[in-house]
Amino acid sequence: MKRISGWLSFLAASIPLLLLIATPAQAQETAALIDLTQHPVGYLALVIFFVAYGFVAVEKAIQLRKSKPVMLAAGLIWALLGLVYAAYGKGAELEEAAKHVILDYGELMLFLVVAITYVNTMQERRVFDALRTRLLTIGLSYRQLFWMVGGLAFVFGPIIDNLTTALVMGAVVVAVGVGNYRFIVMGCIIIVVAANAGGVFSPFGDITSLMVWQKGKLQFFEFFNLFFPSLVNFLVPATLMHFSVPTGRPEATGEVRRLKAGGATVIWLFAATLATAVSFKTFLSLPPALGMMLGLGYLQMYSYLLQHIGRRRNDQDMQAFDSMREMRHVEWDTLLFFFGIIFAVSGLGVAGYLAHLSDYLYGDLGPTVANIAIGVLGAAFDNIPLMFAVLTMNPEMSSGQWMLVTLSTGVGGSLVSIGSAAGVVLMGLVRNHYTFMNHLRWAWAVALGYVASIAVHLWVNAALI
Image (cartoon, rainbow, N blue to C red; front, side):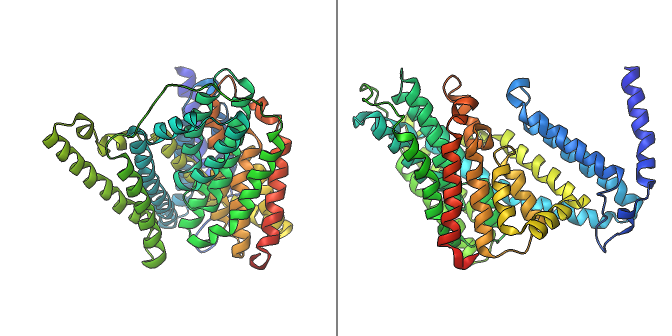
């Protein structure tokens, strides 16, 4: 206890000293922000960020939820910034920067809360179970199923996001591949690749795509220019893997899962909600999150109506439909992780590090090389902080270059199993089959798909670069 008290006393005594140390970089204050890239507080902020990210990397091993270290890091970084800005009488400027980040995160969070609530509701109404039953009963071979689950993951990725797609299709692969180790491994790999690829050409398919859309860097229909590069990213590794998928066909099962009452209507309401979000952004110049909240109203009113009808008919299935209950099942660990990452990265941006990084990447290397490199980094680091860093740097780029970085960050995470949320969640779902090393054995095929997709984009969308 005395040792802890001693460290706290040392830290308290050190902070004023850190604030008073003058450096050349600190003398170069802009009208709004202070350059802390060569200041002890800036160095300390970097250390805090990378230590927190280290805890995220070993989340499974130490059983520490990923949101906890990054939330702590974000708070500490902004507290350090607050002390410096207060010492220089520039607290108002820092407050303005913090409010801007809160606005960005608020829009993202509201959008995701509605989308996740709809997905949870469809799961409760057995929409995905019915799909799995259908696939099990049509009698396809393992190789046909390999292409089927990959194709469905590519189609669902842009609609229900790549993470949820990986969960749904992963459950399908496990169900149809019982007893066939190789098929489950190959199926999981192609699901990750296809879900990430499909998530690129839609603002809803990946968090990074959503962030680019909400920032107004690309308009809704511009994302569809990435369809062919995304398709190539899926087809190249799938073709190379095809001949290693086992032959034969799985045994039929007697399991039958049907939609619950209202399941089909919820699907249409979700489609209407996405259309509303697009319309708000495209035609009314309003945040898409506001359109999503209107769509949540659709679901809430339908929930009330179905429960009312259920009570009149004494139908327990209808009465059990409760959209508010599904909202309580939102994955808050993920949403709070986004909060921590976004605020931690933006804190480093306020300190001036992202401006220096932007000068090097987009000034010295050029936007094309920089955007491709950022995609490769997505294999080692989560693509969300990378994309947020790019958006915070806000380099001057054409729409074709914004498409390139959206493509590269979206599909670059497929190079290794831990490079994307889809891969990480499947590692947890199919522990004994889908592993880091099993995915790594096919990294060469995924890498060829990555290179091919970039080449196709540079060719097909050359006029936009």
